[in-house]
Every structure is written in structure tokens, then in C-alpha cells.
Image (cartoon, rainbow, N blue to C red; front, side):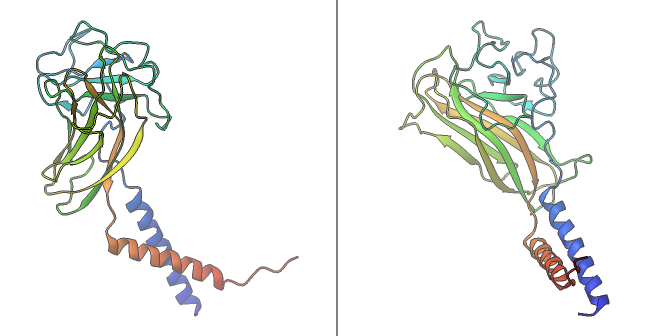
Length: 268
């Protein structure tokens, strides 16, 4: 292979490999996906809703920056990962809201300092949402696929008893709802004060508008148990186009070809 051709092949390989890296590790489109930016001062706390936004001081929005508690009766909490089984969450209700002793942080990234606990009781549930796509993070591309990643788990508050089933519904704009579940209405899987453990989930959605609403809705039963779904470390990024992946793969192969054609160095 001529020297000029080798240099060109090497340059294209580096460019394509960089393109693959950039597409795979694009910036997170979700603001405050780890829920660390909040107004709770480290205290586990119920998210503000339309009928409650005080204690100890009035909160702005839900209390968690970038996220909206969509309905007046939504009973959703932010928990500090360091003490969710020993320190109750500040709430509009008189009872202390705690997670059971079986809860643990295993499988959660060490960087996660807080997570959401979403009530699945049909009488008290409501979606937690965020508008995705703006001039700061970049608008979405219509027809482009996006990957939504997060950790979830199913459990129950300590002041309730009874077997439950749990489901977490995820949606981006008008895309079809995708769910992760543990049991069903006819198959109550989680025992009293049980904890499923944290699971990493990845879902693919297609954008239909430049700005879409990402939502997480807790479902489950029976209502008075209640079923609680936990959510942590949410991220979203564009899925690389197949043509870009093919070009990047070709470039990487080119790098190996060029490397293989270099003469070996002589030993001193």
C-alpha cells in the first residue's frame, strides 16, 4: 500500500473511530437524572404536588430540579440512599414513611445519592415527568431513536402490609408505553416488606417532536398495601444510526490493517 494511501486510511480510521465514540457517549439529555439537585437538604421528603408544597419551607415545583409531579394526589418521595430504612420522609401525612429493612443499595452506582419512591396505589399515583429537548441540551430529531436508561426496584412502605404487584410505565411523548413489572394483578409476587433489588433497564423510543415529555408512572396493587416503585439514575441519549456504526467499524478495521502493515522494530 502506498505511503499516501496508508496515511489517508489511518486518518479515516481515526475519524470514524472518533465518530463511534461520540455517538455512543453523547451527552445525557436528561436534566438532574440522578435527582441530586433538590431542595430537601439531604432529608428524605415527599415531592410537592398541587395540594401540598410546604414543610419545612415552601418548595419550588416538585422540589427536585427539572422534574414535575403531575397530579395533585401523586404520593411520590425522594429518599436519601444513606438512611431510607432508618429515617422517615417528611410528608403531608402524619405517619412516617420508611422503606423496609430488606432494602439495600446493591447494584446502584456509587455516585447515586438519592432516588425516587413512586406510589403505585391507583388513588395516590401520578407520573413524574421532564420535558426533553431544548436550546441548552439540544432539540430532539424527529424520527431519531433515543435510549432511555435507568435503575428500578419494587418494594413497600413499612407502615403497610400484604403481598403486592408492581409495574413501572415509561413513555416518551407519543411513543408507546413500555413497562417493567414484578407480578401482576392476578399474581401477587412481592411479599410483605419485600424488596426486589435494583435492576438496570434500557428502553428505545422514537422522537415524534423536537421536544418530548419523558414520564415514569408507578402502577400496582392492591391500593391499600401500597405498591412502591423505586427509580434512580435516569439518562437518555441518541442511538447511533446503523450507517454511522458501519462507517466507524470500517474505520476501526482500517486502524488494525495499518497497524499490522507497520514493520516490526528491530531489537537493539
